[in-house]
Amino acid sequence: MIDFENDVTASLQVLRSGGLILYPTDTIWGIGCDATDEAAVSKVFALKQRPEAKSLVILLAEVRDLLKYVAHTPPDIAEIIAGFDRPTTVIYEGALDLAPNVINSDGTIAIRIVQDTFCRHLIKRLRKPLVSTSANISGHPSPASFREVETAIKEGVDYVINYRQDDTTPATPSRIIKLLKDGSVQVIR
Image 1 (cartoon, rainbow, N blue to C red):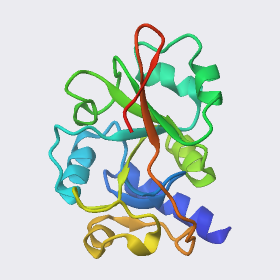
Image 2 (cartoon, one colour; image 1 turned 90 degrees about the vertical axis):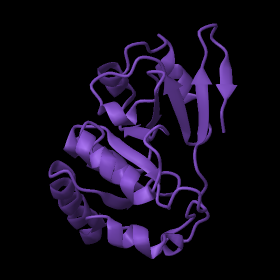
Image 3 (cartoon, rainbow, N blue to C red; image 1 turned 120 degrees about the vertical axis):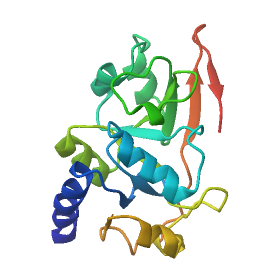
Image 4 (cartoon, rainbow, N blue to C red; image 1 turned 30 degrees about the vertical axis):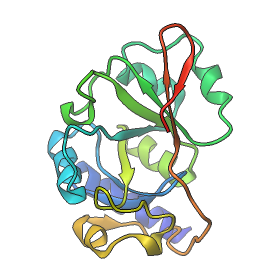
């Protein structure tokens, strides 16, 4: 657990100063930054060599935090999220108080309520949402484990989490859905 606490402390220092971290999530390894810091978000796009027109996923620790960052949440969103059987990112209308470059051009935002212990600790202590995008150069395969993360990504971030680097459990990106106005669900991925 020493790695865990050291990683949280070091990550908080990096995130609060506008830096990038490479970290394990409830899905695959990700590149993260403070989702309210526009300059930090720009660094993520630059590292991934990805156009800013493509939006990023935001991680939150609690369902109630959606109210701070989303203008229009369905009244039954807590029940909807509780019913997910795997990590699921939801696309919401009306993003609030986030860096403009994490918001899709249509005003939507992709948010996952994360279950991973490390991510939850980090987000709660940061008291801000965290960007989570696959730890790869845009167009390259998403890394299923730490050992699959490209050297350019490892060297391009300000801090690499030690916790779970040796975990080789196969990981896949989250499911992505959009809740439509009529109450139905559109599966994006």
